Length: 160
Image (cartoon, rainbow, N blue to C red):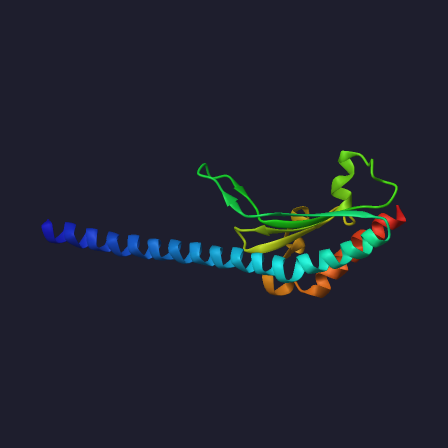
């Protein structure tokens, strides 16, 4: 019995160590993804948003950029990291609060899938509602994609 029990416990330990290693690797991958998103946000997305914002402001329009870090609270609840630009065209300063999403472009993390969701007020079914079609890897998000999404938003706002 002692030999069989020892063998069972040895096998259990092997499985447990493998699971711990898998979990640690997954956590490391998640941290690398979030760090990659922070770099992308700082080096690419924010500069594009700021450049567009300067031109918008010069033409009498208002904009605001907001950022949020990834937060995991102890109760299993998470808030994804994001960067968003909200554009208020001249003359719409008193727009309804329900109109905000239509004037906003957001790049946010989806930490479980390690992808980025782009939600564009100009495209009602964008972002998480679009499923996999609205998800991008870090490598897929480049200046051209950011600019294209921003142009879609502005085009929809100036046509309204």
